[in-house]
Length: 260
Ligand SMILES: O=C(O)c1ccccc1NCC(=O)[C@H](O)[C@H](O)COP(=O)(O)O
Picture 1 (cartoon, protein in one colour):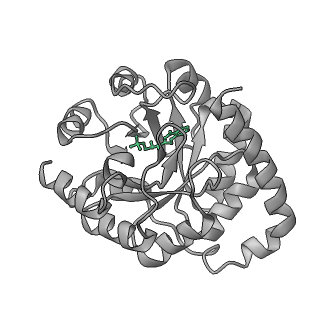
Picture 2 (cartoon, protein in one colour):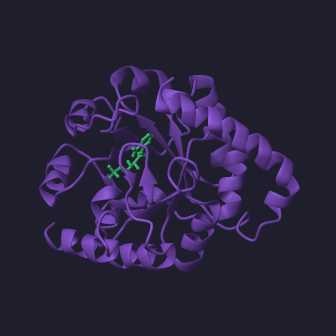
């Protein structure tokens, strides 16, 4: 069983428990459920911003604890002030030490798009994402069939959410492409064995149709890589560990942006 299989098996149990705890009606009564979301594309293309999607990530399966000493409100507002085009907040508890409350907190103190970073396998999670204050959901091609991507993406769009599809290779990209997506993210981390290579982004860039925003995800650790990725056509850059491994992630992002 790969780590991804374990994450998905656990997610199925978590979603079943969440459905018992909080009804669909309760989700739809959340103060955020009826809000208008921010456009991911608009913020990515805003020349006053960096294109960076800055992630709040305490722990990961590949690295263990990265930083469990910082507060989501302070870090995400610092990220936004440093020029983030969007925030990414992990809500998986078991493998990433995330919390749904982290997303609610990030939403309440920021005015830029927020990605719910989780392993979406069920329509319930999409509705929950809206109720927690997310603007963007992530659909991971490695764990979803094309039909599941279609269903989840259509539901997300009907709620005004932006949809980011994550792929790791050409086969995933070709089978998963769907008109209800806003952005395609190329994950430079192989989720099966955790090896990382930004080459994955360069190789897939030319295969992503022009109508989708292009995002490069993971293992981005220096400003020069962003310059190269921009030349290859990428609009967004998802960065977690590079900032979060520092005692002050917001300052780390400011220092990084100063070199762009
Ligand atoms: O980060 C992991 O170890 C990981 C393991 C299994 C599934 C997903 C995983 N990460 C999710 C991500 O996509 C990253 O958090 C995100 O792209 C940021 O990556 P990084 O900048 O390398 O922290």
